[in-house]
Image 1 (cartoon, helix red, strand yellow):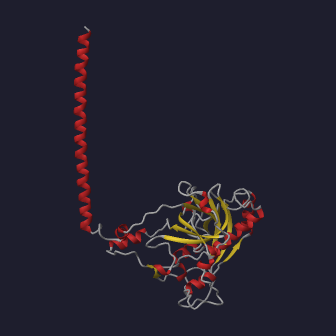
Image 2 (cartoon, helix red, strand yellow):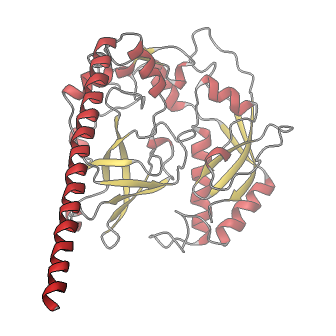
Length: 374
């Protein structure tokens, strides 16, 4: 009887395993056929793209042939949460603060040894908005990057991309000179001030500032013969808009400072352990410096004058920040939402004055400060 049972079990096992073998063979055959189908599909797509010129034309193909790959060493955390309103140069807002947070998986803490008072930050313009322009140029048959840009200080006039510091560059890499406030090896970051970088900016490298090599000794009263600065750049560095803070806004700012709600200022979160009065003074200075130097493009200037320049689109909590009856714009700085209006100051411009459409002579009135992101 036992032999009969064993025989039946062996026969059943033989048929079962043969059946499973056939299933596996069928699956392998189906997989080969699917791979062949996908390969043929990819080949046909590539052939179609080649016929349309997309495989051998455009900026992306040129870049891919000579591409250089690199990995950021860290990122920026700063008071600037938006591209719009961030100073075009850090020196225009010396009270602004941020930090370079290094990637601990790639960089060792002792890499910061002997770093002194100032540093260059090499970074990527990761929030560029000119992708559509590049695609349009490619579709039109151009094999090069768009060569002309409109600097805000020129009021709409075009100049060569390499004559400016526009973020819209063939290789979107920038550099910024910042003051080192402190080096925090415990949290592996460098606290800096006087920066012009948006929060989250990828950092490619940091280098020490060496005045003997990095400064050409520019002196407005004694300009070297071999140093020429374009007039629209020189005049732009001198332009500052008048900023008026209303009494209620001053009260708002003090209450926020006393509550310790700033992200980069104050005893609770600042590495320098500054007092409430110091935090209030420094935050106030940062607000004035940023808004005074906030020279925008003609389009952005018109929006600000009409009260249509709003930070609400980027806030985590969506809400109606403007009832469209008052011309109030908003801007985010640190954990503040700044409610302000812009008044046009009547000034006589020359026909070729670059400041005509830049709003550089406007008056900014701050009506209210509000805490966000807490």
